[in-house]
Length: 113
Image: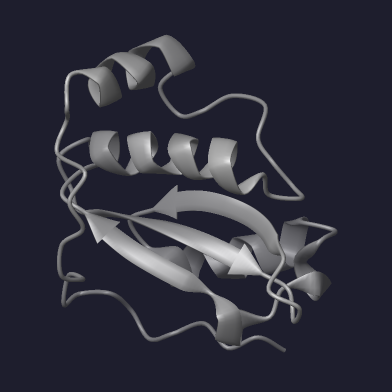
């Protein structure tokens, strides 16, 4: 599970306020889940969404945590995917968080309704 390319997505509202930062191997599927479960979803403007891909889940988790700390999304998480001390150690050791090209198997884009 940890060695698959993983995306970090940033969801913004129409005024480009950062609402949420998340990670997924299938962002469009995750957006569909959010649209059904998250009360803040109607605020999301998908045209403002930013998606960056990373080599694995560890790299994505490091970037996600850094984004959550620096961008201060309106809607956050209680705990990062692997725990803050582990992610801080990876970042301190210079774990490669260089973005990669998106995988070609990503399903068709989710359409906001």
